[in-house]
Image (cartoon, rainbow over all chains, first blue to last red; front, side):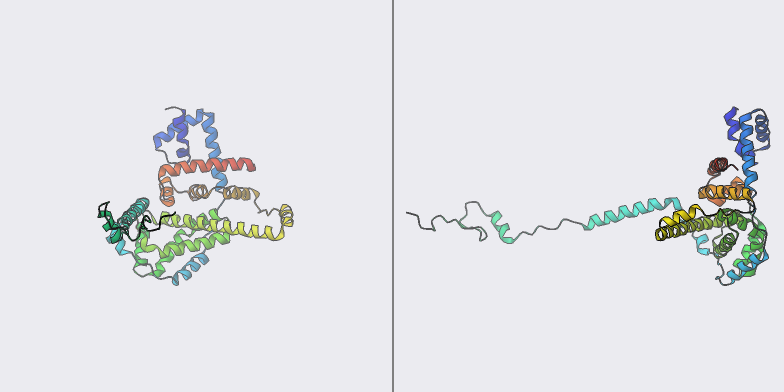
Amino acid sequence: MDHDWFRERLLDLQDAELPEEERRQVLRHAENCPACREQLEHWKQTRRVLSEIAGPAPSEAFVGRVMTAVQGVPSPQREEWRGRYSVLRVPEWFYPEIGLAAAALALFMLSLFQQEAPLSVSSEVLLLSRMPQDSQWVSRSEPAGYEGILPEEG
Amino acid sequence: MQDDEDIFVIKSILSGDVQAYEILVRKYQGRIRGYCFGAVGNAAEADDAAQEVFIKAYKGLGNFRAVSSFSTWLYRIAVNHCRDFLRRAMRTKTESLEALQESEGESFEARIAVLPDVLSPDEGKRQVREALDRLPENYQAVLILREVQGLSYQELAESLNCSVDAVKARLKRARQELEAKFKRAGV
């Protein structure tokens, strides 16, 4: 047991939270260690100063005021359903994970409905695409060649 | 530690005996009013806060699972209530100061510079109070519950809803910070 081991237990000693054997060991160490003794003294002073903040004395008037206020409040009921379905209760630390899972599910559902829109292809274009290249037919949408239609110049 | 008498009283209240709540109020008023006074710092506001705590506890009595003792459950309500109260008060104070500063401009600065310091009869207590008020809320709560109310580590952990190790760490930092403030203030 070194100095640090004792120093870590000074707070427990101050708060009377040490087992008897450890308490005696720490006290023995503090007697011979100026740094630990000083630390203990500091904490004692802090406690003394803080204890000066005394609370108000018990008051029957206060009890009366609370009871008057309580009369206007609906009677508390034991929440039986909680006890009955306590297995189903979700711990608070699990809430973010539930949120993430819900968001992922929403995105997945959205992707299912967001299919590619069908291309708008007219039947005419479809027929032309299947026609041989050297066909005599031309599409109405394509301008006809002017060759042979206009009179030759000169 | 669970108090069988408290459990008996709570069962009576839940069975419809509203008046039985008086027993709990009388038993715990000292601790809760003491805590509220430590946290809020003003006797009248502390009493209002403590009254609210008891009303909240009454409303939520059906949720009390008796996993921890009634007193630590009550402390937990008080800690949360006082924290909310202080945040609201801080917001109002900031807003009203800003509004005053805006309306009065530079004359406001000059006026607060010469405001007489309101001294309580006991200067030492006032300084302790001020040092405590300047601590973060969670340090303030753990110090009052430990040093003024005398709660054990386990009770502190239950009241503050954290582990015993977290309580020890917080208590250590709170004490160090308070000591530093005392030194600066010359307490």
